[in-house]
Structure formats: structure tokens, C-alpha cells
Image (tube, rainbow, N blue to C red; front, side, top):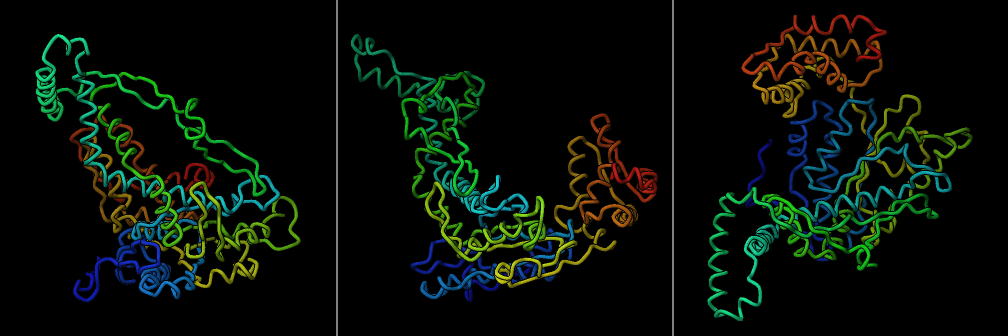
Length: 471
């Protein structure tokens, strides 16, 4: 990763000015963001530059006075490129860098209002759910220490319950209390050492999760989560007793105590703020809805979907079970192959809401070589790590990688071009035999060279009819 600027000149994290939601944006320069993306995605420099600038602009916006910052809208991005060239991965990695709520959704799953299917507002509600999960996890981590103490105390009460009231009447109550405390302290040491992990205890757990209902609304069919526990506590708030091990009980009680320490209202508020100020929606397959008036048959609602999408991208209020959510500052990254249609086939109003357009390059043979070896999550590294769990040492030679890259380009050219995803299908076929026999190959070193690749894949690659089904 590129080195960061000295702390004396720029703080490591941007402070949110008063009046703007307190969402912290990592202070990374565009150059540093591109360097981070380079670790996972090969090439596509223009697309990386575009998303890096978009993320940096969020930080810049937070430095402005609230009245000015409110009027600065994000510059949404339209990525144009065939499948498997890195569009989704760039957006996903960007969201991880920004620690922002991220949702990938296919535009083709939506239908115009009045048709059966999901309406476009549902993607904002889905994004809020993701943000709520993120905030809850952070809150749980923040209260984990306090929750662990409370969970341990509850567990000790189960392991060493207090004596019946009748015993207090026969003996000195103070002595009984002291004996109970001393016994529990002894058990605390055993509990922490793990010597009691296999003992069984009986604890109370929720009888069932809260139900959700599908409702027909004017906006379409929506799944509505109802907190029926609050509405009908006597019916849905019941508990049941369950026998579990001490190790399992510790985790269950830890979750229960953490939930008690978390303020749900605060979680909802922070989740909405994160979505409004830092949310990213990746709208894939937008070329599939690039129809205009005059379409017939099943595609008749495509322009209607675009018109429904327009107010969401422009900025509107969407209702959710956590409150109203403003979409004015959500960053939308749309993507499509545009083989049949073209960006100009989108309605003009929607085109105007995606002012930044980047075209991703088709992958070359040399790109495939780099994809197989350079990223931190390269396929060769993944398979080597997977088989090492069985005690098998897997090594790929340089000529094997080159041969795999050549075959990937060849298969993509004669069948459907699925970009880098072709490498996954080839690798599975290549290592099929080793993966199957790996449990019986502990201590064996497998060297994959060009000859090994040709022997395993050449027949399938040459047989185009078979390739269409196997690869």
C-alpha cells in the first residue's frame, strides 16, 4: 500500500463537522485507494481512479460547512464492460475500504409499479438492514467485555444455584451467603480454565424468531418485518428451556447480555446515518432495463423501471421500519455489458444522474497471468491454502500459469466470454483429481506444470461441444 501522508499534516481520520451525521470517512488519498484496489483487482486503472475520486469526495464533503455540504451530491458512476472484468469486485472492495454499507443488486429483478415483483425502493430498505447489522456488530464488540462479565455471573448462578429458602431459616444466613460466594469463586476459576465446558446446564432461549410477513402494498410485494414481540408480548415473547453444554451456554448468554446492553434506538439512528452519508449501491445489469417506449412483451416495463429508479438516484425519502431514509448522498455505481443496448438507450434523465462513465478493458492473456498470481486472493494461492489443510503441498510453475491463461483466452474466444470467471472453471477441472484424493495424500507434494495443465484440460478445450457444457 502506498505510504500515507504525515500525521502532522493530515489526521488519520476525518472528523465530521457539527451538523453533519457523524459518519467517519477514512482519510485515504485517491492514490492510496487505487493502490489498495490494485491488491485485489488487476488492471482497470480508469475505473479505479473514478471510484477513488468518488470516495475522496465524500471526505472532502465532510470538511465543508453543513449548509454547503448538504447541496453537494455524489457523482454517480456508470461502468461499461463485459462480465468478469472486475466491475463488481472494484465496487465491493471500495465499500470495504470505506467501511460503508454496500449492496449489490441486479436492475433486472425490479419491475415497474403495477407489475408483480420488487419495487426499486426495496434496495434502499435492504441497504438499511445491512447497515443495522454492521452497527449491531460494532456495538456488540464495544460491550463484549461487560456482556462477558454478566454472562459469566449468570452461568455461575446456573452452576451453583442458591440454597432453598428453608436452609436459610435453619442456619445463619450470613454464613450461607459467604459459603455460596466462596463456592462460586472456585467455580469461576474452573469455568475460565475450560474444565467445565462439557458439563450440561439448562438455560432459557427464545422460542422462535420473529415472523415476517409478505404484504401487497401500492409499491409492490414487500417483506415487512414486524416486531410482534412488542405488540403481543404474551404470545410471541415466550421462552423455552434447553439443555446445552457450558461452552454453548456461555456464547448464548453472551449474545443475550450484549443485546440487553445495546440501545436499539441508537442503532437505528446510526444505521440510517451511515446509509444516508456513506451508503453505496451497486446496480448491476442496468443495460437490461435500457429499453425505450415501443417495447413489447415481457420487456414492456423496462422504461418504467428506469423512471421509478430516477427519484431514488436523484434523492428522495424512503420509508423503512427504522425510519425515513434520505437517498440524496448515497453513491450509486451502475454497471452493464451494453452488448445489445448502449448507454444512450437509457432515458435522458437517468443518463444525467450518472455523469461519470468508465469503460473497462477486456482481459488479455497477460492479465490472466497476473490475476492468477498477483492479487492477495489469487486462485493459485486459494487452492494451495485449501489443499494444505489436507497436508498436500501444491505448487504452480510459471509455465503452468501461462498455459492456464492461454487456455482461458482460447475457451472465452470460442464459447461465451465470461472474463476472469473462466479461470475458476478451468482450475476446478484441473485440480479435480487432486481435490478428490487429497484426504489420502497427506505429505505429498504436487507440482503443476504446463504438461500437467495440457494433460488435464487439452481434450476438453479442443472439443468445443463438450466445452460449452463442462467449461
